[in-house]
Length: 101
Image (cartoon, rainbow, N blue to C red):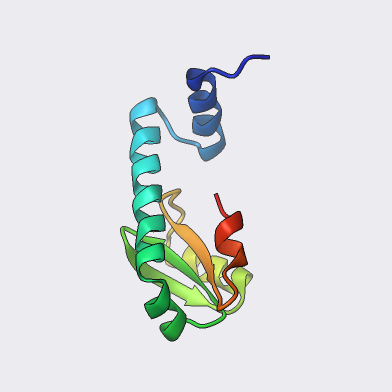
């Protein structure tokens, strides 16, 4: 099977539950901005949230916890079910940064 850009976009939209290509583009842009925020603030995040998971939305940390499941629960209680939240592990070991999407 040949995977064209269009087929890849359709697959991502289905996986993410996004309604249309415009929303997929908005998600991709927001996701990239959140990654850039994390990268550019890594040292600050490491000092403030060492060995924790952080949830970033709109280039802001909206929640954090040492336990990923507790963070997910906290986000759920906040009513935050958005695909636009980026969750990242903050650690002095940066290997996970190389493995993330």
